[in-house]
Image (tube, rainbow, N blue to C red; front, side, top):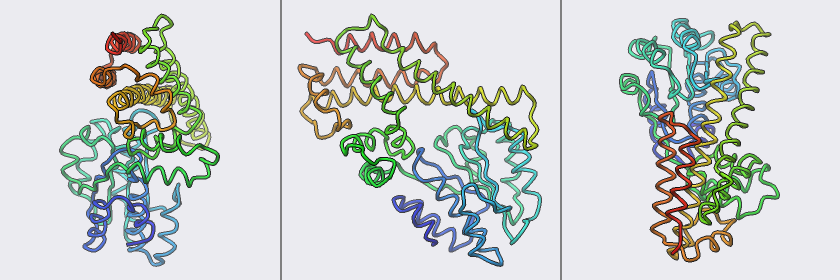
Length: 373
């Protein structure tokens, strides 16, 4: 196994065994890399692609080196990711389905990677099915997903699974502490980010960014206001405004990137460009609002733990003093029910409910649950 693949699967024993076996026996035509966001799927897929391409190249070291670059200049490694909320159907047709019919530009293999496969529309998945059923002998297709249940069963069943687990909090904490981006960050805040990330490297880094810190503060303020019964100022609006601002920023940056591609010769209609940018904005807005509610639920779980005398399992290691004050005299069972209510609201937002009304109802419910006496 290459050093890149060893590094990518260092804390993923099941994935490592699967990929070792694949390289020893000869790789399958299709793999489904499935596991939570930030668990190393991308790095492992890139490393496996590099080994497949190197194994069929006249100069294995050079092929491996180019395939490991991100973005990769290797002509036989095609990597697509959604610009917006979903993959463009034509992008999948042109860059994967039709391209797979052409023989390798160099060496004897081609690898196609579809990142965030859960963002494939049913039309794209159905179009991809024939390629998965009857792939050319030189083609290998990797699907990466954090939500495998969204994929059609006909797609998932034709791929060999590669399982990834959430990263242990201790591993994330050590990585964050060693990162230059965390220089000057208090160890307690790093420990909190590692635990609140739930095994997601990307989320852990986000929580230590200005956006993540602001979102945590707003979630904490919302729970504190509910606990004090002070909801006249509608504190939940801060979460909505933070998510909206993040969505607008993502929409603008996506539109700028698409306009640059258009200038480089990639043809899209003005309508397609606007729609794709809007989808990216909506996706980012949803992600940030969901994270805000998850942080509210985590805060409530911490209150339940501290009220029950189990402070050692609290996630927010950097805010223990404030949590102790909030938890004084609180019924642990009520705090646990409040955390469950926050999670219920997260799930309800997937059903396109009115967000502001859902959050208003949630925080008045939390105020009732957290009331003392």
